[in-house]
Length: 494
Image (cartoon, rainbow, N blue to C red):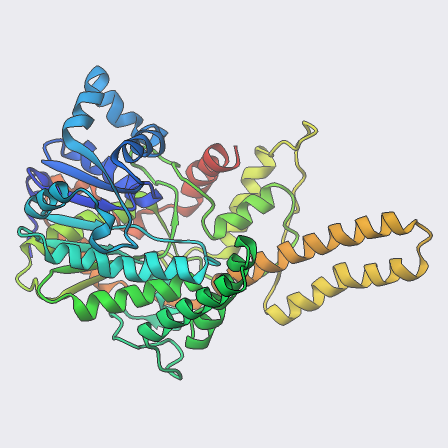
Protein backbone atom coordinates (compact mmCIF):
# COMPACT_ATOMS: atom_id res chain seq x y z
CA UNK A 1 0.00 0.00 0.00
CA UNK A 2 1.29 3.44 -0.91
CA UNK A 3 -0.19 6.53 0.66
CA UNK A 4 -0.73 9.66 -1.36
CA UNK A 5 0.30 13.06 -0.06
CA UNK A 6 -1.43 14.25 3.11
CA UNK A 7 -1.28 17.74 1.70
CA UNK A 8 -3.17 16.70 -1.43
CA UNK A 9 -5.59 14.54 0.53
CA UNK A 10 -6.67 17.37 2.85
CA UNK A 11 -6.85 20.06 0.17
CA UNK A 12 -10.41 21.18 -0.44
CA UNK A 13 -11.86 18.88 2.24
CA UNK A 14 -14.72 19.86 4.54
CA UNK A 15 -14.42 18.31 7.99
CA UNK A 16 -16.79 18.27 10.95
CA UNK A 17 -15.14 17.94 14.37
CA UNK A 18 -17.32 17.25 17.41
CA UNK A 19 -16.18 18.06 20.94
CA UNK A 20 -14.06 20.86 19.52
CA UNK A 21 -13.10 22.30 22.93
CA UNK A 22 -11.57 18.98 24.00
CA UNK A 23 -7.83 18.38 24.34
CA UNK A 24 -7.31 16.12 21.32
CA UNK A 25 -9.91 17.86 19.14
CA UNK A 26 -8.05 21.17 19.54
CA UNK A 27 -4.80 19.51 18.56
CA UNK A 28 -6.44 17.99 15.48
CA UNK A 29 -7.82 21.38 14.40
CA UNK A 30 -4.45 23.08 14.95
CA UNK A 31 -2.57 20.46 12.94
CA UNK A 32 -4.98 20.66 10.01
CA UNK A 33 -4.79 24.46 9.88
CA UNK A 34 -1.01 24.38 10.14
CA UNK A 35 -0.21 21.73 7.53
CA UNK A 36 -2.99 22.39 5.02
CA UNK A 37 -4.53 25.87 5.15
CA UNK A 38 -6.22 25.13 1.82
CA UNK A 39 -8.90 22.98 3.35
CA UNK A 40 -12.36 24.10 2.33
CA UNK A 41 -14.00 24.31 5.77
CA UNK A 42 -13.75 23.11 9.35
CA UNK A 43 -17.10 22.87 11.08
CA UNK A 44 -16.47 22.75 14.83
CA UNK A 45 -19.41 21.52 16.92
CA UNK A 46 -19.51 23.16 20.35
CA UNK A 47 -22.13 22.74 23.03
CA UNK A 48 -23.98 26.05 22.99
CA UNK A 49 -27.50 27.44 22.92
CA UNK A 50 -26.89 29.69 19.94
CA UNK A 51 -24.24 30.59 17.31
CA UNK A 52 -23.06 33.63 19.27
CA UNK A 53 -22.17 31.53 22.32
CA UNK A 54 -20.57 28.89 20.10
CA UNK A 55 -18.38 31.50 18.41
CA UNK A 56 -17.41 32.96 21.77
CA UNK A 57 -16.42 29.49 23.03
CA UNK A 58 -14.39 28.93 19.86
CA UNK A 59 -12.34 32.05 20.48
CA UNK A 60 -12.05 31.72 24.27
CA UNK A 61 -11.57 27.96 24.67
CA UNK A 62 -9.87 27.01 21.42
CA UNK A 63 -8.15 29.72 19.40
CA UNK A 64 -6.96 31.76 22.40
CA UNK A 65 -4.88 28.83 23.72
CA UNK A 66 -1.07 28.84 23.47
CA UNK A 67 -1.49 25.79 21.25
CA UNK A 68 -2.36 28.06 18.31
CA UNK A 69 0.59 30.43 18.66
CA UNK A 70 2.47 28.82 15.75
CA UNK A 71 -0.51 29.19 13.41
CA UNK A 72 -1.06 32.76 14.65
CA UNK A 73 2.58 33.57 13.89
CA UNK A 74 2.26 32.02 10.43
CA UNK A 75 -0.62 34.31 9.51
CA UNK A 76 0.22 37.39 11.55
CA UNK A 77 -2.34 40.16 11.09
CA UNK A 78 -4.33 37.94 8.69
CA UNK A 79 -5.02 35.25 11.31
CA UNK A 80 -8.52 36.53 12.07
CA UNK A 81 -9.61 36.66 8.43
CA UNK A 82 -8.07 33.22 7.78
CA UNK A 83 -10.07 31.72 10.67
CA UNK A 84 -13.26 33.48 9.56
CA UNK A 85 -12.90 31.95 6.10
CA UNK A 86 -11.92 28.42 7.11
CA UNK A 87 -13.53 27.74 10.51
CA UNK A 88 -17.18 27.89 11.55
CA UNK A 89 -18.37 27.35 15.11
CA UNK A 90 -21.59 25.33 15.12
CA UNK A 91 -23.93 25.42 18.12
CA UNK A 92 -25.10 21.91 18.94
CA UNK A 93 -25.04 18.95 21.29
CA UNK A 94 -23.94 15.40 20.44
CA UNK A 95 -26.39 13.97 22.99
CA UNK A 96 -29.28 15.10 20.76
CA UNK A 97 -30.51 13.85 17.39
CA UNK A 98 -29.03 15.67 14.41
CA UNK A 99 -26.27 16.72 16.84
CA UNK A 100 -28.65 19.33 18.26
CA UNK A 101 -28.44 21.60 15.19
CA UNK A 102 -31.40 23.99 15.26
CA UNK A 103 -30.54 25.89 12.08
CA UNK A 104 -32.15 23.78 9.34
CA UNK A 105 -30.42 25.63 6.51
CA UNK A 106 -27.03 25.13 8.12
CA UNK A 107 -27.79 21.47 8.71
CA UNK A 108 -28.70 20.93 5.05
CA UNK A 109 -25.56 22.73 3.91
CA UNK A 110 -23.39 20.60 6.18
CA UNK A 111 -25.01 17.44 4.82
CA UNK A 112 -24.11 18.62 1.32
CA UNK A 113 -20.55 19.72 2.08
CA UNK A 114 -19.01 17.38 4.67
CA UNK A 115 -16.43 14.84 3.50
CA UNK A 116 -15.11 13.66 6.88
CA UNK A 117 -16.43 13.56 10.43
CA UNK A 118 -14.03 13.32 13.37
CA UNK A 119 -16.17 12.42 16.37
CA UNK A 120 -14.07 13.45 19.37
CA UNK A 121 -16.78 14.56 21.81
CA UNK A 122 -16.67 12.61 25.07
CA UNK A 123 -17.39 12.74 28.78
CA UNK A 124 -14.01 11.60 30.10
CA UNK A 125 -14.35 11.66 33.89
CA UNK A 126 -13.95 8.17 35.30
CA UNK A 127 -16.72 8.87 37.83
CA UNK A 128 -19.06 10.77 35.51
CA UNK A 129 -22.81 10.56 36.11
CA UNK A 130 -24.17 7.53 34.29
CA UNK A 131 -26.87 9.53 32.51
CA UNK A 132 -24.37 12.10 31.22
CA UNK A 133 -21.78 9.50 30.17
CA UNK A 134 -24.46 7.48 28.38
CA UNK A 135 -25.91 10.49 26.54
CA UNK A 136 -22.50 11.70 25.31
CA UNK A 137 -20.32 8.62 24.94
CA UNK A 138 -22.93 6.11 23.78
CA UNK A 139 -25.84 8.01 22.26
CA UNK A 140 -23.46 10.67 20.96
CA UNK A 141 -21.78 8.00 18.83
CA UNK A 142 -25.17 6.99 17.40
CA UNK A 143 -26.09 10.59 16.62
CA UNK A 144 -22.74 11.18 14.90
CA UNK A 145 -23.26 8.02 12.83
CA UNK A 146 -26.79 9.03 11.81
CA UNK A 147 -25.53 12.48 10.87
CA UNK A 148 -22.82 10.86 8.74
CA UNK A 149 -25.43 8.76 6.92
CA UNK A 150 -27.16 11.99 5.83
CA UNK A 151 -23.98 13.46 4.34
CA UNK A 152 -24.12 13.00 0.56
CA UNK A 153 -20.32 13.21 0.11
CA UNK A 154 -19.44 11.25 3.23
CA UNK A 155 -16.05 9.58 2.92
CA UNK A 156 -14.99 8.60 6.44
CA UNK A 157 -16.26 8.73 10.02
CA UNK A 158 -13.41 8.63 12.54
CA UNK A 159 -14.49 7.85 16.10
CA UNK A 160 -12.05 8.72 18.88
CA UNK A 161 -12.34 6.06 21.58
CA UNK A 162 -9.93 4.70 24.21
CA UNK A 163 -7.85 1.53 24.38
CA UNK A 164 -9.22 0.90 27.87
CA UNK A 165 -12.62 -0.17 26.56
CA UNK A 166 -11.02 -3.60 27.11
CA UNK A 167 -11.64 -3.26 30.84
CA UNK A 168 -9.04 -4.73 33.20
CA UNK A 169 -7.63 -7.06 30.57
CA UNK A 170 -4.49 -9.17 30.93
CA UNK A 171 -1.99 -10.28 28.33
CA UNK A 172 -2.05 -9.13 24.71
CA UNK A 173 -5.16 -7.04 23.99
CA UNK A 174 -6.14 -7.40 20.31
CA UNK A 175 -7.21 -4.63 17.94
CA UNK A 176 -10.71 -6.00 17.57
CA UNK A 177 -14.12 -4.28 17.55
CA UNK A 178 -16.85 -4.96 20.08
CA UNK A 179 -19.85 -6.99 19.06
CA UNK A 180 -23.22 -5.94 20.41
CA UNK A 181 -23.60 -7.10 24.01
CA UNK A 182 -19.97 -8.25 24.37
CA UNK A 183 -18.53 -7.69 27.84
CA UNK A 184 -15.03 -8.11 29.34
CA UNK A 185 -16.21 -10.60 31.95
CA UNK A 186 -18.33 -12.55 29.44
CA UNK A 187 -20.58 -13.53 32.36
CA UNK A 188 -23.39 -11.05 31.85
CA UNK A 189 -25.81 -10.10 29.12
CA UNK A 190 -25.47 -6.46 28.16
CA UNK A 191 -28.41 -4.73 26.52
CA UNK A 192 -27.90 -1.03 25.82
CA UNK A 193 -31.65 -0.40 25.82
CA UNK A 194 -31.90 -1.93 29.30
CA UNK A 195 -29.14 0.39 30.52
CA UNK A 196 -31.00 3.38 29.07
CA UNK A 197 -34.21 2.24 30.72
CA UNK A 198 -32.49 1.88 34.09
CA UNK A 199 -31.24 5.44 33.79
CA UNK A 200 -34.70 6.75 32.90
CA UNK A 201 -36.30 4.88 35.80
CA UNK A 202 -33.72 6.13 38.29
CA UNK A 203 -34.09 9.72 37.07
CA UNK A 204 -37.87 9.46 37.34
CA UNK A 205 -37.49 8.14 40.87
CA UNK A 206 -35.23 11.06 41.81
CA UNK A 207 -37.70 13.56 40.36
CA UNK A 208 -40.53 11.97 42.34
CA UNK A 209 -38.45 12.40 45.49
CA UNK A 210 -37.66 16.04 44.63
CA UNK A 211 -34.00 15.12 45.01
CA UNK A 212 -31.54 17.98 44.84
CA UNK A 213 -28.75 18.23 42.28
CA UNK A 214 -26.11 17.00 44.70
CA UNK A 215 -28.14 13.93 45.62
CA UNK A 216 -28.96 13.18 41.97
CA UNK A 217 -25.31 13.47 40.99
CA UNK A 218 -24.21 11.12 43.77
CA UNK A 219 -26.90 8.56 42.91
CA UNK A 220 -26.19 8.63 39.17
CA UNK A 221 -22.43 8.37 39.67
CA UNK A 222 -22.96 5.37 41.91
CA UNK A 223 -25.32 3.76 39.39
CA UNK A 224 -22.70 4.14 36.67
CA UNK A 225 -20.06 2.39 38.77
CA UNK A 226 -22.46 -0.41 39.71
CA UNK A 227 -23.55 -1.09 36.12
CA UNK A 228 -19.99 -0.85 34.78
CA UNK A 229 -18.65 -3.25 37.40
CA UNK A 230 -21.53 -5.67 36.80
CA UNK A 231 -20.51 -6.05 33.17
CA UNK A 232 -16.76 -6.09 33.79
CA UNK A 233 -15.65 -2.49 33.26
CA UNK A 234 -13.98 -0.45 36.03
CA UNK A 235 -15.87 2.81 35.49
CA UNK A 236 -18.70 4.50 33.62
CA UNK A 237 -16.35 6.22 31.18
CA UNK A 238 -14.92 3.10 29.53
CA UNK A 239 -18.27 1.29 29.88
CA UNK A 240 -20.17 3.92 27.92
CA UNK A 241 -17.35 4.33 25.39
CA UNK A 242 -17.47 0.58 24.75
CA UNK A 243 -21.23 0.75 24.16
CA UNK A 244 -20.64 3.62 21.74
CA UNK A 245 -18.23 1.42 19.79
CA UNK A 246 -20.78 -1.40 19.71
CA UNK A 247 -23.37 0.89 18.15
CA UNK A 248 -20.95 2.19 15.53
CA UNK A 249 -19.60 -1.20 14.53
CA UNK A 250 -22.98 -2.90 14.34
CA UNK A 251 -25.04 -0.08 12.82
CA UNK A 252 -22.58 1.66 10.49
CA UNK A 253 -24.06 0.28 7.29
CA UNK A 254 -22.11 1.63 4.32
CA UNK A 255 -20.35 4.38 6.27
CA UNK A 256 -16.55 3.89 6.18
CA UNK A 257 -15.51 3.78 9.84
CA UNK A 258 -12.24 4.26 11.71
CA UNK A 259 -12.03 3.64 15.45
CA UNK A 260 -8.94 5.19 17.04
CA UNK A 261 -8.10 3.85 20.50
CA UNK A 262 -5.32 5.83 22.17
CA UNK A 263 -4.01 4.71 25.53
CA UNK A 264 -3.09 7.27 28.21
CA UNK A 265 -2.58 10.55 26.35
CA UNK A 266 0.26 12.79 27.53
CA UNK A 267 1.47 16.22 26.44
CA UNK A 268 2.80 16.94 22.96
CA UNK A 269 6.12 15.38 22.03
CA UNK A 270 7.12 17.72 19.22
CA UNK A 271 4.26 19.57 17.54
CA UNK A 272 3.42 22.35 17.41
CA UNK A 273 5.92 22.53 20.30
CA UNK A 274 6.81 20.10 23.12
CA UNK A 275 4.89 19.88 26.38
CA UNK A 276 1.47 21.39 25.61
CA UNK A 277 -1.28 19.80 27.67
CA UNK A 278 -4.67 20.50 29.20
CA UNK A 279 -5.98 18.90 32.37
CA UNK A 280 -4.54 16.16 34.56
CA UNK A 281 -4.67 12.84 32.75
CA UNK A 282 -4.51 9.53 34.68
CA UNK A 283 -0.85 9.04 35.70
CA UNK A 284 -0.38 12.80 35.88
CA UNK A 285 -2.56 12.84 38.98
CA UNK A 286 0.25 11.02 40.73
CA UNK A 287 2.98 13.17 39.19
CA UNK A 288 1.24 16.28 40.52
CA UNK A 289 0.67 14.76 43.97
CA UNK A 290 4.31 13.66 44.06
CA UNK A 291 5.53 17.14 43.11
CA UNK A 292 3.36 18.65 45.85
CA UNK A 293 4.91 16.29 48.39
CA UNK A 294 1.60 14.53 48.97
CA UNK A 295 2.41 11.10 47.56
CA UNK A 296 4.11 8.73 49.97
CA UNK A 297 2.17 5.52 49.36
CA UNK A 298 -0.16 4.38 46.62
CA UNK A 299 -1.67 1.32 45.06
CA UNK A 300 0.50 0.14 42.18
CA UNK A 301 3.49 -1.95 41.18
CA UNK A 302 6.87 -0.58 40.14
CA UNK A 303 6.94 -2.87 37.11
CA UNK A 304 3.46 -1.91 35.89
CA UNK A 305 3.76 -0.63 32.33
CA UNK A 306 2.20 2.79 31.87
CA UNK A 307 0.86 2.61 28.34
CA UNK A 308 1.15 6.25 27.38
CA UNK A 309 1.46 8.16 24.13
CA UNK A 310 2.12 11.84 23.39
CA UNK A 311 -0.92 13.72 22.13
CA UNK A 312 0.62 14.86 18.84
CA UNK A 313 1.38 11.25 17.95
CA UNK A 314 -2.30 10.43 18.45
CA UNK A 315 -3.27 13.22 16.06
CA UNK A 316 -0.68 12.13 13.50
CA UNK A 317 -1.99 8.57 13.57
CA UNK A 318 -5.56 9.80 13.11
CA UNK A 319 -4.66 11.85 10.04
CA UNK A 320 -2.68 9.02 8.44
CA UNK A 321 -5.54 6.62 9.22
CA UNK A 322 -7.93 8.97 7.41
CA UNK A 323 -5.57 9.06 4.46
CA UNK A 324 -5.23 5.26 4.39
CA UNK A 325 -9.00 4.79 4.57
CA UNK A 326 -9.48 7.14 1.64
CA UNK A 327 -7.21 5.04 -0.57
CA UNK A 328 -8.06 1.63 0.86
CA UNK A 329 -9.74 -0.92 -1.37
CA UNK A 330 -11.81 -2.22 1.54
CA UNK A 331 -13.75 0.83 2.69
CA UNK A 332 -16.56 -1.41 3.94
CA UNK A 333 -14.29 -2.67 6.75
CA UNK A 334 -13.96 -1.06 10.15
CA UNK A 335 -10.36 0.10 10.55
CA UNK A 336 -9.36 -0.08 14.21
CA UNK A 337 -6.09 1.15 15.69
CA UNK A 338 -4.51 0.94 19.13
CA UNK A 339 -2.32 4.01 19.56
CA UNK A 340 0.04 3.29 22.44
CA UNK A 341 3.53 2.28 23.48
CA UNK A 342 3.41 -0.78 25.74
CA UNK A 343 4.32 -3.29 23.02
CA UNK A 344 7.04 -1.31 21.20
CA UNK A 345 8.59 0.94 23.87
CA UNK A 346 7.36 0.17 27.41
CA UNK A 347 7.56 2.76 30.18
CA UNK A 348 6.98 1.68 33.78
CA UNK A 349 5.80 3.27 37.01
CA UNK A 350 9.38 2.92 38.28
CA UNK A 351 10.65 4.84 35.25
CA UNK A 352 8.12 7.61 35.85
CA UNK A 353 9.02 7.85 39.52
CA UNK A 354 12.72 8.14 38.71
CA UNK A 355 12.13 10.95 36.22
CA UNK A 356 9.74 12.77 38.56
CA UNK A 357 12.30 12.60 41.36
CA UNK A 358 14.98 14.09 39.07
CA UNK A 359 12.71 16.89 37.92
CA UNK A 360 11.23 17.98 41.24
CA UNK A 361 14.60 17.71 43.00
CA UNK A 362 16.03 20.30 40.60
CA UNK A 363 12.79 22.23 40.06
CA UNK A 364 10.72 21.98 43.26
CA UNK A 365 7.24 23.40 43.39
CA UNK A 366 6.75 26.34 45.74
CA UNK A 367 4.19 26.03 48.54
CA UNK A 368 1.82 28.74 49.73
CA UNK A 369 4.46 29.98 52.17
CA UNK A 370 6.92 30.57 49.35
CA UNK A 371 9.15 27.64 50.28
CA UNK A 372 10.26 24.70 48.08
CA UNK A 373 8.17 21.58 48.49
CA UNK A 374 10.08 18.61 49.86
CA UNK A 375 9.45 15.35 48.00
CA UNK A 376 10.03 11.77 49.08
CA UNK A 377 12.86 9.79 47.54
CA UNK A 378 10.76 6.71 46.87
CA UNK A 379 7.04 6.06 46.92
CA UNK A 380 5.85 2.92 48.68
CA UNK A 381 3.77 1.05 46.10
CA UNK A 382 1.18 -1.36 47.50
CA UNK A 383 0.24 -4.16 45.12
CA UNK A 384 -3.38 -4.75 46.11
CA UNK A 385 -6.39 -2.67 47.06
CA UNK A 386 -7.05 -4.73 50.18
CA UNK A 387 -3.52 -4.10 51.47
CA UNK A 388 -3.87 -0.40 50.75
CA UNK A 389 -7.17 -0.24 52.64
CA UNK A 390 -5.55 -1.91 55.64
CA UNK A 391 -2.76 0.64 55.56
CA UNK A 392 -5.27 3.50 55.38
CA UNK A 393 -7.08 2.20 58.45
CA UNK A 394 -3.81 2.10 60.36
CA UNK A 395 -2.84 5.55 59.11
CA UNK A 396 -6.13 7.36 59.69
CA UNK A 397 -8.74 5.36 61.61
CA UNK A 398 -6.76 3.91 64.52
CA UNK A 399 -5.19 7.26 65.51
CA UNK A 400 -8.68 8.73 65.69
CA UNK A 401 -9.83 5.93 67.98
CA UNK A 402 -6.83 6.46 70.23
CA UNK A 403 -7.36 10.21 70.31
CA UNK A 404 -10.97 9.76 71.31
CA UNK A 405 -9.98 7.69 74.33
CA UNK A 406 -6.80 9.25 75.71
CA UNK A 407 -6.59 12.79 74.35
CA UNK A 408 -7.07 15.67 76.74
CA UNK A 409 -7.90 18.11 73.95
CA UNK A 410 -11.36 19.65 73.92
CA UNK A 411 -14.22 18.06 72.01
CA UNK A 412 -14.21 20.91 69.50
CA UNK A 413 -10.57 20.30 68.60
CA UNK A 414 -11.21 16.57 68.35
CA UNK A 415 -14.17 17.13 66.01
CA UNK A 416 -12.11 19.37 63.75
CA UNK A 417 -9.28 16.83 63.66
CA UNK A 418 -11.72 14.01 63.01
CA UNK A 419 -13.47 15.81 60.14
CA UNK A 420 -10.22 16.82 58.46
CA UNK A 421 -8.83 13.30 58.72
CA UNK A 422 -12.05 11.84 57.35
CA UNK A 423 -11.96 14.23 54.39
CA UNK A 424 -8.37 13.27 53.62
CA UNK A 425 -9.21 9.59 53.92
CA UNK A 426 -12.25 9.87 51.65
CA UNK A 427 -10.34 11.88 49.03
CA UNK A 428 -7.40 9.49 48.96
CA UNK A 429 -9.62 6.43 48.76
CA UNK A 430 -11.70 7.95 45.97
CA UNK A 431 -8.62 8.78 43.89
CA UNK A 432 -7.11 5.37 44.55
CA UNK A 433 -10.25 3.44 43.54
CA UNK A 434 -10.59 5.47 40.34
CA UNK A 435 -7.01 4.91 39.20
CA UNK A 436 -6.32 1.49 40.68
CA UNK A 437 -7.25 -0.38 37.46
CA UNK A 438 -4.57 1.51 35.55
CA UNK A 439 -1.87 1.38 38.23
CA UNK A 440 -2.28 -2.41 38.38
CA UNK A 441 -3.03 -2.95 34.69
CA UNK A 442 -1.57 -6.21 33.34
CA UNK A 443 -2.42 -5.90 29.66
CA UNK A 444 -0.29 -5.01 26.64
CA UNK A 445 -2.01 -3.45 23.66
CA UNK A 446 -1.39 -5.13 20.34
CA UNK A 447 -0.89 -2.51 17.64
CA UNK A 448 -0.31 -4.58 14.50
CA UNK A 449 -2.83 -2.47 12.54
CA UNK A 450 -1.11 0.71 13.65
CA UNK A 451 2.27 -0.83 12.75
CA UNK A 452 1.04 -1.61 9.22
CA UNK A 453 -0.07 2.02 9.00
CA UNK A 454 3.36 3.20 10.15
CA UNK A 455 5.08 1.00 7.59
CA UNK A 456 2.91 2.41 4.79
CA UNK A 457 3.65 5.94 5.99
CA UNK A 458 7.40 5.32 6.04
CA UNK A 459 7.34 4.14 2.42
CA UNK A 460 5.43 7.19 1.26
CA UNK A 461 8.24 9.74 1.27
CA UNK A 462 9.22 12.99 2.91
CA UNK A 463 5.75 14.50 2.92
CA UNK A 464 4.75 12.20 5.76
CA UNK A 465 7.83 12.89 7.86
CA UNK A 466 5.85 15.41 9.88
CA UNK A 467 3.37 12.74 10.92
CA UNK A 468 5.42 10.67 13.36
CA UNK A 469 3.47 8.30 15.57
CA UNK A 470 6.04 5.59 16.17
CA UNK A 471 6.43 5.02 19.93
CA UNK A 472 9.93 3.66 19.34
CA UNK A 473 10.98 7.23 18.56
CA UNK A 474 10.23 8.33 22.12
CA UNK A 475 13.17 8.77 24.47
CA UNK A 476 11.08 8.51 27.62
CA UNK A 477 13.66 10.01 29.95
CA UNK A 478 14.26 13.05 27.75
CA UNK A 479 10.60 13.57 26.83
CA UNK A 480 9.14 13.27 30.35
CA UNK A 481 11.97 15.22 32.00
CA UNK A 482 12.26 18.06 29.48
CA UNK A 483 8.82 18.29 27.89
CA UNK A 484 6.03 16.51 29.70
CA UNK A 485 6.54 17.44 33.35
CA UNK A 486 7.57 21.04 32.52
CA UNK A 487 4.41 21.30 30.39
CA UNK A 488 2.33 19.84 33.20
CA UNK A 489 3.75 22.39 35.64
CA UNK A 490 3.28 25.29 33.22
CA UNK A 491 -0.20 24.57 31.88
CA UNK A 492 -1.86 22.57 34.66
CA UNK A 493 -0.19 23.05 38.06
CA UNK A 494 0.75 26.68 37.34
